Length: 596
Image (tube, rainbow, N blue to C red; front, side, top):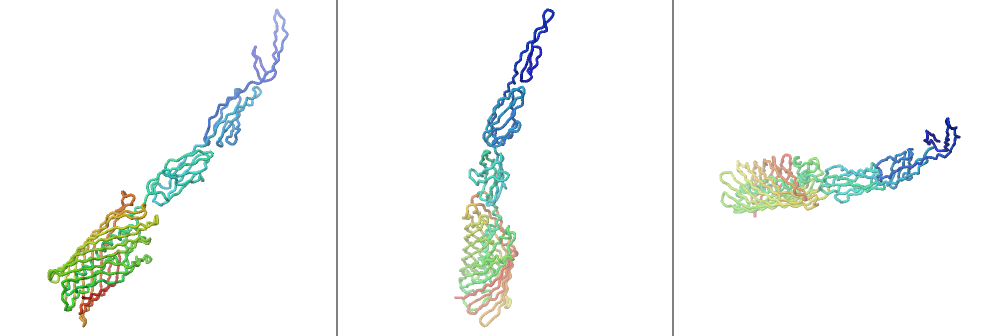
């Protein structure tokens, strides 16, 4: 229980300690009687030092306890709030938010009494979280889907994630597997968007907000849209066709003025049916699945064989003035090769002209004509259409300087009004629009009228100039998709050479004349540049180029003309033409001229 060294007692353990005091005496004294004293040795005191514990966030990790006992004996720990924390050895594990109480104990031993347990309580707060957001694309087309995915880190987080765009809630999604939430949208407006994700938190996790992810919502380049390209091409080429039709009709009248016996009134408006097969030029459109369908009424009218090309000695007085009409009213359908389902059947007036002319001298005749033209064009298969009407005025003159030569010239101006309806497949809507147009045109033709017995030969050559203009306009549909079109123009110069051959058979009632005409037209390359923008972003422009109808056009006409002695003339013509890759056409035209 105890030991002694000298006069110092050392306690070994608790119990009863007996100390015996003795004196052995010496030469002068006898030994003293030993005296024994017994006393109890109790266990030593034992106290625990266990400092307070700070609050900790759930998910911040386990930590080690460091309490000590005055006895130097090891301290043991226990958690009394097992729902929020647990202790293994001296390591504390955080389980849930709330209060956590740890009790530190020291049981003592043979020498030290058990220490009084000391407890410490601290708060376990919600776990800190972070949110990371990513997008499936940094840039996407308007009305195309884009997906935003938020990943939340924390203590097994649950709950909801709210996606916002500049404070506007886009959607609220529950966390799922891998602590992720995803939102797919196709309704973001055009422009830049900064998207954030906010986690709502739960019983064990704090709320948090991500940094922003930026996504740009764009619209496609409208210059690559086949319907846009087809619409512009239809309007530009319709302007050219308006002018060409009036040139053809007036030239037809000028050729008839070579005959001194031209009746004072002639009607050359024919009614015919045509079937046109027109494979479009591949360079004109980016998408061959969206072809331009042009009705026969917008195809240039071949030169009609003038009903008076073979003079009849009718005895009629040569008039000093004349009234005339010319043109063709066509009906039929266009058919893109290999795609018969893309037919469009409508009546179309391609061009009608009426004029008044008079004799200035024996060699000079002048006149003025008014013309009307119409164009109806279907583009693609989704319903995009363009309609145009044109009114024009043309001054013309025919001069016979000498011999068999005739100089025919004309100059005119036309004004057009177009309406359109363009289908946009992305929102599935139509964009209506209206624009004005105009055309300046002129032509010069030199003809040599030759006769040999009953044969009549008329070689001719000429130049044509057309400057087609389209005004600016803005579509009036959905503002997001409406386009603004700038002014556009297409100048075109063409050269023409041809030969008209006829043979006259005299009959009891007049003259019957089979005719043949061949013509070659070379249109020098010309293009129209169309600049367009989205109506709500006028500062961002796109450009497309529309090729002219151009290239080489060959045409031929087989006909028969009947010239009666009473001045009645009739013609029947079968016409054929080809314009290379722009197509082929054929048709019939009849006319009847009755003098008054």
